Length: 401
Ligand SMILES: Cc1ncc(COP(=O)(O)O)c(C=O)c1O
Image 1: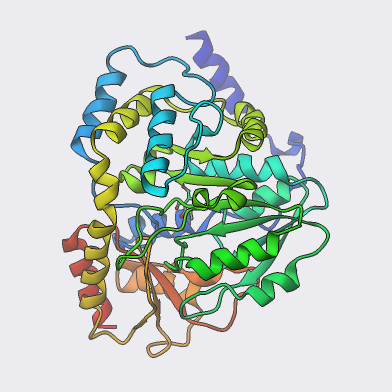
Image 2: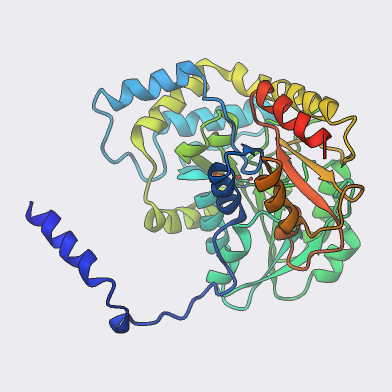
């Protein structure tokens, strides 16, 4: 009761704006993320939400049961800072099974509160004031703020459509004495592009003999199509020696709202990573970790079958859009499909995405927001991690545009 009163009193004092001390933002150009904006607009407008990257179906029943079990059986206090041992071991076993790499669960695997936290901790571990990081545009939106907050600067290298390949000559042009980090993301959000062996060779070439670290955002590691392999950086000992490899259970188990991810990095890098992690979140929800550890051990077929599951959705969505006026770019991975709407409209993509959410009742993400300096192109991103019926309803509308 007294606690409530105290809080009420505090809340009542807040509106006296004249006494509020102004705060100079460290991130002056950052607003609310486009994902939040478009999802809210989709909800307000009762539109089909193909914007934000999350499924409209639930995680596997067995996983939900295991988490429920731990939640109701006393597993609700702080777990160890780096994550519970069975989950770290499960991650290490999966890495060995899929990528043939032995990593030490004790010292090289850290469980985090989503990949977002892992990315922040990895970037913060490396970047010091004045350092530069190379990022590829279109670029996932959490990287640059983390670089900026550490006093660093992002150098943006555009990917080349329609395949959104890395132009390695441009990477070399962007490299300089201050370059401390390269931020890679394969499979890539928002384009679905997937790195191949030549990319790995080029990465190897550009970092050789340079004091450069790598953050590899591999949250879509299990969603690679058409028989291709995911080229995780843990496969390559020389590259892994300087890498933080980040993944997310949210994407793999259809549980994005749980925000559980992890970072695999060599021992000295993991040690520094944990220094930051222990003061960012310290650790991650206990019952989720135990439930995930059980499911990972009991049901490895879930992540092994995930590519086929999403490939069927990609093929369905692309098939349904075949008679539309959109041009589809190749999407060899992730659960995103880019469409070029140039044959339908010349409008700016952000305006069009908003208008179609309101008028056509299908929400998407404008791709220009992923660029520092948006080129003159007309792409929207649709998320196909949706029930088939949802994709069918959306496609019917999109084909009429
Ligand atoms: C490329 C990429 N990295 C990181 C994340 C964040 O993952 P998490 O929800 O586990 O923080 C996302 C989520 O959309 C993503 O697309």
